[in-house]
Amino acid sequence: MADKDLTAPPILNPRPKALFRQSAVKVKNHNSLITSPVLKESLDAALLEYQQRVLMGGNGDVNNAAAASFKLKGALEFIDEFIKLAEPYQRPPSTPTGDRIDHTV
Image 1 (tube, rainbow, N blue to C red):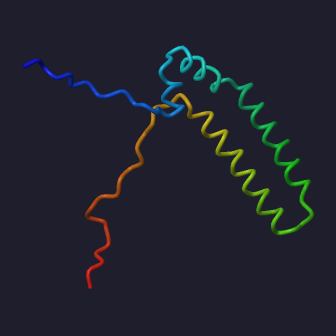
Image 2 (cartoon, helix red, strand yellow):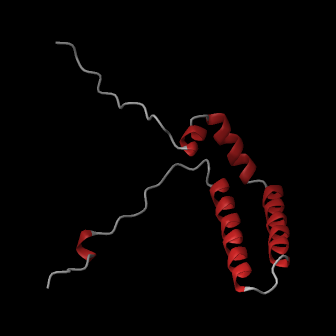
Image 3 (cartoon, rainbow, N blue to C red):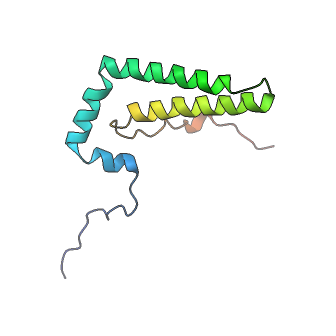
């Protein structure tokens, strides 16, 4: 009987971050880009400009304020994702089983 191939099957639908990280050149270039002081200054200026544009469009309505809040949060999440693009995925820490609440009555 022939030995079975025990390698992991290919991931059919890999995450975009995983595809990006397959290229060492892309990861190296991205790391040099995000450590650049010019990028930090550019992101700060762009974010401030975006904040001003989003907030100037509102007329004090609570719905506009909520929408502006979501837009700004999305912009911050995008910048965070962009900066961490070359970092390997890290699983969030799990809760130890001893700290769980006992729901028995």
